[in-house]
Length: 640
Image 1 (cartoon, rainbow, N blue to C red):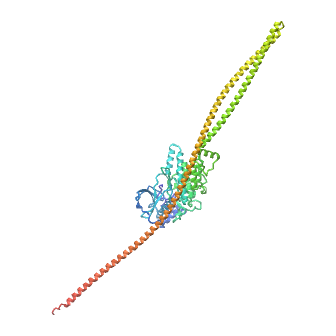
Image 2 (cartoon, rainbow, N blue to C red; image 1 turned 135 degrees about the vertical axis):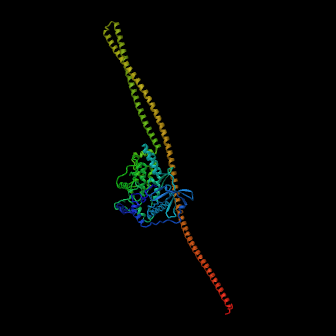
Image 3 (cartoon, one colour; image 1 turned 60 degrees about the vertical axis):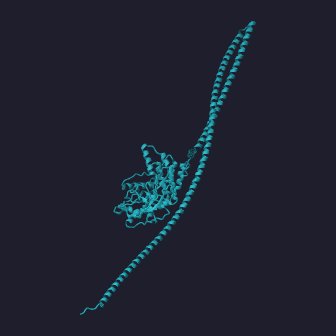
């Protein structure tokens, strides 16, 4: 609950004060009254037109609780006390209508009616994330009060303010802390879905009304302006909270809800609808993620500033502008929040769909309302199946490494074959030239022998000697060429051997890398098998959790049926007690009447006895007087 101005009528929005409503000379106040049924009802209440309260009999009295001197919080329509149940010794929350001398009688009775209506709504709802009502009480002076569960924890509003202060202090976004709050708020979405199933609309789902426990639990409180869609309107309640829109399409005031968390149709006073809660919860999620609301609401002092703020907010609601993404880097979460805050009610999630989308997002599944590209789906699959992704990457890397090794080995084998071919050709050339040199040497020796033979025979050996020298020179030239070719062939062969040795080293390294790749592939296969075992275990756990959830749902349904049966039995017992009480009261009245008649008869008998005693005394007195007269007559008369 938030402290409010006591001069305000207890609703959100720029309503006139009570003093201004009583003095309608101001033209703006007169124009406001013509368009605001709630303020007209206040004026009617000042004219002694009371709003009847329909409270059951036999309610617990305020004497059963220990009330503190001061309220711990005051809101627009109620005040909250941290009391103690003296019967059970437990701490409870006591919610009573707001009081004050500045409130007209009709306004106070309207607040009392809303407190009793809240009690009936909470009695209809039994959910772990909805505050529990223990009972409805009635003070000796006549006003009702609710006895509620005391929920330990801090409000979501305080938590968000704390994160904002930390971010402002060091300039570091608290993204992780904000996203952690989403898992807590899923239970609030489930509570709204549960309430909508039972035809109840909260109409004020804001951070102020969400309490966070120490262990992550969340509770939705303050159902003071909630509406039971199946309950008939009492008095002028419908005219106050479910007003039709004005001719211009929107109201000039906001009759119920908290800006900037309410949608356009709620600000127009339209009939309560579950889409109101989805929109308000979407704005709450937006603030949790982005750190601010789509329409930045600033605190304003003074009626004029509050009116300007309301008008700016109404203009923003009526515009076609869309809020920027809550988290631009996360399109899935931003899409969920944007759909919850859709301008048109028909485009929004239902509460059940919102629960489903949030759970899919938090568990890493594909969100049913989001459109994914192929790359987006692959990236999502990789994030959700890390072990399998690692296995696939190992397999791909092994395949690529094997292909590279094979290509390297093939290239080295080809180079080795080329080098061997070149070395063999060089050796063949050198051998051929060596043979030619040997042949030339043999021819030179033969020429020399023929020259010597010619000299011995005395023949002309000059020409033969010249030919022998020429052949010897040619042989020398061929020998040198053969030696150079042999040297070159030897160098080529050495180079080929060196390259072959290098190729063998590369081959050995490639084979080692291939063996390592095979080891990685084996490890990848083992990791894949482990991932498959973990996936099977996760599926088994998920199936077990589903069975447990179904069993819990069945138990809850059975508990609901038993509670409904117990409620019917309690109602029947209450009716029997009321009938017995009525019979006892009638018997008491008859007994009192009999006692009164007996008392009257006793009094008449005593009066008759008194009258008879008086008559007897009068008779005795008459007898005495008659005896005196007779005695006087019998006495002799005195002589003359």
